[in-house]
Amino acid sequence: MRIGDLAYRTGVSRRLLRYYEEQGLLRPVRLPNGYREYGEPDVAAVRHIRAMLAAGLPTTVIARLLDCVHDDGGEMVPTACPGMVSNLRREHRRITETIERLQTSQRALDAMLAAVRSGT
Image (cartoon, rainbow, N blue to C red):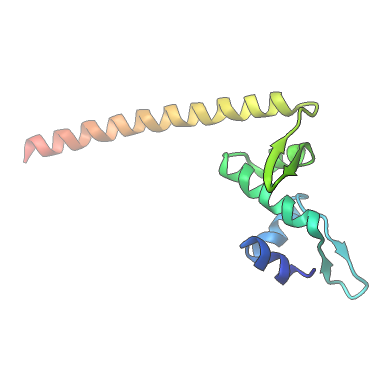
């Protein structure tokens, strides 16, 4: 299938599919005329990429973990590949730290809003 077909089947824009290719997440076959040719495994790969992005993983981590997941009835199922647990734990810590920083910022903004409201 061509890139337009993959975009239609996955709901992901052609531009984003090209970005995934640039990041090494998709590896379509290149035809002699330069067109990209995708297969059914690419449809599943795009679903997996989207699920991992939704979990907050950056594309660099997804590139390392993409081969560690497979489909089971349309659901993404991770397997314990080398480095899978350590990568996921590291990203979990990173996201937890980000949430904590955002909560600190939110509390500071709440205090500023409260001060402004009490002064008016």
